[in-house]
Length: 119
Length: 208
Image 1 (cartoon, helix red, strand yellow):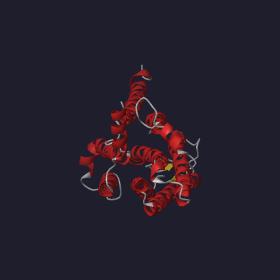
Image 2 (tube, chains in turn purple, orange; image 1 turned 120 degrees about the vertical axis):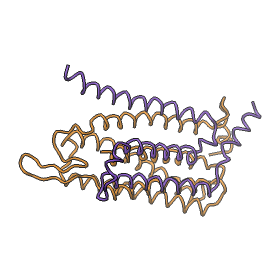
Image 3 (cartoon, each protein chain N blue to C red; image 1 turned 180 degrees about the vertical axis):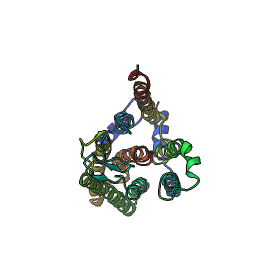
Image 4 (spheres, each protein chain N blue to C red; image 1 turned 60 degrees about the vertical axis):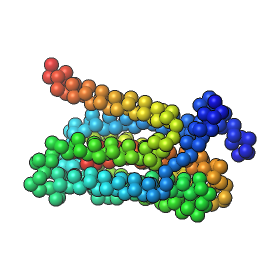
């Protein structure tokens, strides 16, 4: 147990280097610029001939970009990639419940508006 | 904190510091808290009977015209600063763990400055919206928008105050590498506030 404890304590503190933090920061900045750029060419003042083609993909693309940003911050800045797996579990399990809550409420509302009110 | 008290925190069955397990558990519970607020916003999206609306202009039956209420460039700037603040706080933590007091104090001050700007941006935004006719009870959009972003803003404010207390400790020389966990806990909370905004920004401001 002692060796295990020592190992964990060591793992907890072997965090990435400043260079990696800057690279992740740059990627986060680029992904945010992509999100806003996507909005601008779809609905903004710069929306052009491409807008109708992008509209069906707009929401999935935005969700994908924000999921990527979320994962990058959690893995590298919150150190879940390096830290003890228990922390990942304590964070991910409620996240799964949270996603379930969001999806369940949206499905229930959609059902209510599509069927329950008319029936 | 004495050396004995510091060591006492490590005496857990997992071998992990109980304070770090506690902050992660708290963050887990906060995930579900914000999930309910985000759900509330999403299920009420587009169901307001009267304006002002987030993306569309609206004219009231009395003939009063309301422009779309969101100002995407300002919020984008706030979002970018919040993301940068996450970078700054890990650099501050890295400085604290290496015993680099100058980096710790400098990066932490930059983090706090970004947080203060973000809160200022939100105060400006709320005031601006109020002047443009969107109150808390004006419509479903107003109620769900102010509830979600207001709770997030409150979390940012708490984060700024928490980081400021750590910064004061650092300036006073009371944050040696052995106590860097004090900053790590505040930083974890700060990152969580950031990841919540990563979800709120597209869901509230960009998706029509």
